[in-house]
Image (tube, rainbow, N blue to C red):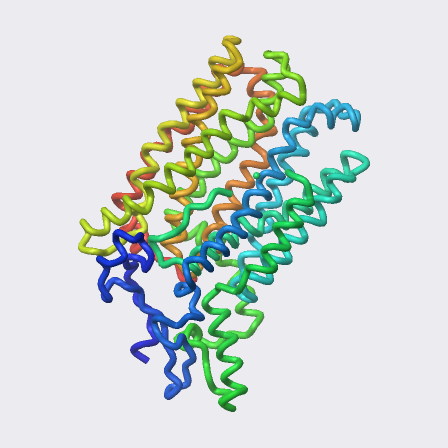
Length: 475
């Protein structure tokens, strides 16, 4: 049974780059639990087993990441792209309450609280592929309802339902990447309401190209197949061999409470959830109020008001590119200095730099809009805000995936639940806050909230490993 236990050290990954691939040694490769039929344990056929998702070809891995990231782009877009149309919605459905208008946008994010708590455990029981496929088509069907809704009540209900399906890709995408890549090496992927036709095409593509990647499910299926082929009902999965036998009900219950255990028993997960929840709430507060600012103060038409998000969008793009080009390289360099051992905390130092852009963007946007400076100034001010948000979101999510490799979906579920709660309700306070403080001081207050969290990544970089070891979570 010695070969059944997985190496607990987070080693340098298999696929760093062409430049570093030849430098790794066999000792640096992660160990996978392997077959040992003499002791009745079913595992992988070896470290290079082609059925292991970590050993998929680069082309196959890229295809899987591409199709999943496509729906991960469309789902959040469905939540925020609706904001510039609030004026038309108010006219069409005769809505006069600003709170109700804001709620039609934020209600979608509220489903990100429910969805991950259901879909993440189900993916760890039944596999990523089937759960993601069902969630995607659930999203598509209810998006059609949103397009055809005859009144605001049904629109809110349809957005509520579509958000449940749309949350699947946000949670399961992280789990899929953890399945494909060893800890410390990931393709950085950004996660955006669009036509149901585009969503349907992407969902169909996922059904065609996607395959199961969750290791425990793959070995469980292999075990069931070998029990029949070899007539050996005593065979056990290598992932279950060291666990106490549990009923299916207990397995389901344990999977469902896992995100809560991570949230409330891991100080690191709790702190990072609080951090990203604050940023996420600010993001959706701005989504709901930006178009009103440019329509009211700069006389933009409703059609042109969507351009007011251009600066933030450009910031998002450059933020994703910056993280993608620097994150893995920094980890590789720090790993070499650490005797070839990679630690999840190596993702965090850069977050300190990106976090510094958040208050700059908020204050820039707030005061230029407050003083009625030319409309291009506040739009440009939103660019560093978007840049900083991506620079904070992506490394922190990758850090959690590195830290909770096998249960990455549950870790991201805990993160998604908390940030979505704040993202659903904080924007409702936006109109009253700006009415009391104005755009300048209102955004300055938001900027100061971001300043408070700037030291967090550095503190976790220094003490994160100690905290993780001191407060282990039995998953």
